[in-house]
Image (cartoon, rainbow over all chains, first blue to last red; front, side, top):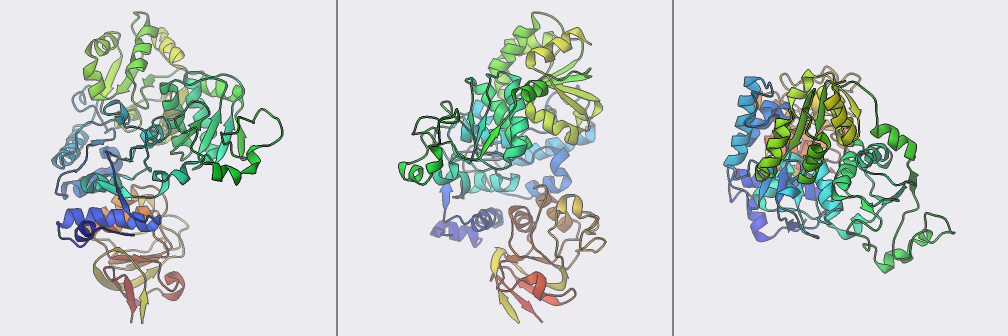
Length: 409
Length: 132
């Protein structure tokens, strides 16, 4: 891999041991993935924040680092609400360790904003190069915004933040962003059904790049849930939706000439010439989507906001309450900044009995482990909470989640 | 004998070889407190990585494995050096954050060439190993 003179100097330790290690990480990854050079990135989002995940080893590593980030950098959700951890029932030892992790990151100049939806803080633009970690945020940035990021590990995102660069490989390169598999659903879907679709399709897609041919036009929140579930049940970091997502015309004419299979006999897979639908195809059964998004259960907790809720989703929850109070434990997770910008909305939700939690979520907080059955409206949470929290998870639409919460059955 | 390879993490260390034909998941596969391999059915099950030149095809499993390698180092039970056939990010990052000399892509397959107990020196900075 080519390094500039300044990069070479850092690699050889002339700017201290922390930056040397960070450059070693970037160079090692670049070599592994055959990158030719490093490129500038606009922002970093760093995973490896919850004490539940990284433990004392991770804490010690971060504490030992010195320096300041060169680009705006934020964190993934941690194990608790930084202010309301007592109310969450977090063990004091855990809270102390978690606070130490956040302080160690802050010392490096990282903004202690712990969210899986950093695009609500600062929205990347089409074509921006980023170094983000959180799988659902990576999927959103690539697919919905047309920005470019690989799925970084915690240390490699931190290295990118401190150096301001990342190796040029993978999804930073246009040629690697073409769809590899076509996914078709024959009926319109909406709301939680997008998360269910991602949950079902992700398993079959693995780390491919799907293009969805749908009968309905997803909202931005629906795309968020689709991507989050694809990334959780598969390893999808980029998806396209025909006529919807921003990279419709990504395929240049020369590439299309080499893909004659796109012009097959008349069937409903076919689309206008300029679009590219790969030959590999998956059809997801509408009945299975509906069944996945509407499971019957009697949960002892209802947890929404995975990924962190948008303002629109918070408003939807409020309107579904119709002024009622909830009779069950209900968590809604969102970003601290978003909540603090909408104080009235948060106040109204809280006065209904809902716990609005910042900085954390049901997947990474140990507080989730005390429950037996969790009802969620998210394909991602459906996938992760059983293994990460030891709870049974069932999925419902947002409407049904709020109904169950208010009925108390 | 000297074999050329490729730098992953700089530094130099010598130790007895511990050779695994299986990939290693450090999270769940190696006890961070003792350095003992605890993955059932693994080629190194029950063996200890402490102070060895650990030779294996590459990493697998969770990315938290990088931090487990760091924990091994902090607990004084990490390998002295590591050699992979072809490194992947989990082990490469773990070696770098822990300062464990590491090389990969040797001119000869290290898992076949090197035997358990051979004395091996890894010069990560130069990207070479020496067998004596």
